[in-house]
Each structure stands twice: as C-alpha cells, then as structure tokens.
Length: 346
Image 1 (cartoon, rainbow, N blue to C red):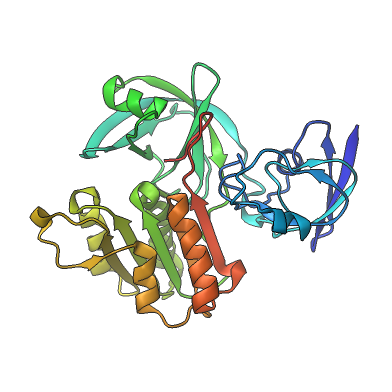
Image 2 (tube, rainbow, N blue to C red):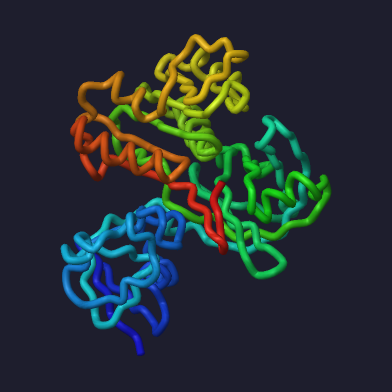
C-alpha cells in the first residue's frame, strides 16, 4: 500500500510505500526535505501534519514533545504515514540534483591534531568525483552493516581529498578503531553526500556561526566555500564564528580560523573556553559558547544563525536566540551531532 503526500507550500506530491518514513519517501522521489541525524534526535526534519495521520515512530522525547504532537508537529525521519497526508515544511532546492552514491575510498593521511581529534583525509578513485554542498556529511559504511556519520570539512571546490574530523569517545566503535587500528592506505566505503546543513546563499543577512568541538568541521567547509565564492562574485556579507571547546588544546585548528580573520575583513573569530586550565593562561572568552553570543548581541532579528555540535548546545542556542533575542525561527539552521548505538555524527 502507498500513501499520497502533498507538501505545502510547494504543492509537490510524492508517494510513501509501506514501511517508509515521510523523509525516506521524499528523498527517494527527489524532494529534499531538511534533515540531519535521521534517528529522531536532532529535530532538523520537524514539520507540521496539516491533514492525515502518522505513526510518530521512535524518537527522542525532548526533540518532539507530546504538546508538539498534539499541535500536529512530527519528525519526518521517524513518522510513518497511516493515511494520505498534507505536510508543511521548507524544501531545500539546492541539493535536489545531487546524487547520493556509495563509493570506496583510501585513507590518504591521518593527522592527530588534539588528544581526542584525528583529521582523516580520504581519496576516492581517480575516475570518480563526489559532488556535494558545503556543510553536508557522509556515512562511513561498517562491515557489520552499521554506519557512522561524519561531516565533510573540506569545501566542494577543494575536493582532491575528503576531510573528516573524528573525535574519539568511549564506546565509539569507528572512533576507537580510528585511534587504535586505522592506518594510511586502508580502504573504506561510504555513502553520501547527505544532510541539509548548507549555506542559504539567497540571503544577504549577516551570519553567526556557533560551533562546539568538532562541530567546527562543517562550518569550516561552509566558510571556505563562502570565501571562495566571494573571490569570484564579490560578497561583503558579514560573518562571525564562535567556536566553543573546553580547553585551549581542543582548539585544534585555531591558527587556521585566525588566518581567516586576518585575510577577510567581513569575518571575525571568537574562541570560547568552558573549562580553561591554569596552564592555558587564557585571556579570551570563557563560559558556554552560545552565551557569548547572547552577551554580544541585544537582538538577532536581522541575522541568520548556523549552529553545529553537541545537541545540548544546539538546543540551548535555538531556544535562547529565538526567545531572548528575537531570532526568526526560520533563520536558525543546525546540525546536531547525535550519537546512538546505530550511528553517530562527530
């Protein structure tokens, strides 16, 4: 059995087959709905059921509350249609022509840039090219059928090697393999590109990037893309990056971010430490990274915000920027680095 689904306001129509979520069906038929984790944890795919019924599926109760369900909201990565539907959500037109592919790759280089962060450079076959948008991610396909998600840290124009920033953490199967067993020239397989955390270039609003930990990776891709485009087309759109970590040693590419600030008049970089050590001799900003934004801006009504990293940071930023500083809800874009037994984005 299949169910007809209509998207508002575009009036695009697609069909979901038995067992398919709304998101799976939309992507299969070429309609790019916003999404991130695909396991009901990040909330990027949240939209409204205007007409019809769904099985809400398994999801994080904080990401979709009972109150939101009663108001007709659903997570399209989890929601299974039980009837014909009319849904409301914003479609991402820029990725509709980019094909998701499965490809082999070779580990070209491994660079340990912090005690718990490894930068891996991957080379795909010489006769292949991965077309992607800055900010998207790939799934590393594991031998046991599982997959692990990692943002691409290189910009699309600089695609000789695909760069991943892998953080080691207890219980992270792929991460622990990376730090203990992986070596250069190993062969991996991946699927991608995936995700909708991309730069909205149809706006001229100033941008605030908020990253925590390795949430810096997709922001790096987006910023390097923006700088590259500006050289070609010219663009003075103002951008600022707040990068939050615990200690100074975790700012693993601080010199790179600092060089961007020196080279681009429209860009500023503000590192923030939450647990600075006495040996850090830190003279910069301290505390939670999103709170530094609150301290610097009385109003965010004229801005766009791109937040990436730990779910607790992303959700706190979303709530406080909208409720306390007047950021329009549709100008907050996020990629929450969730982790579960079946997948992670780190």
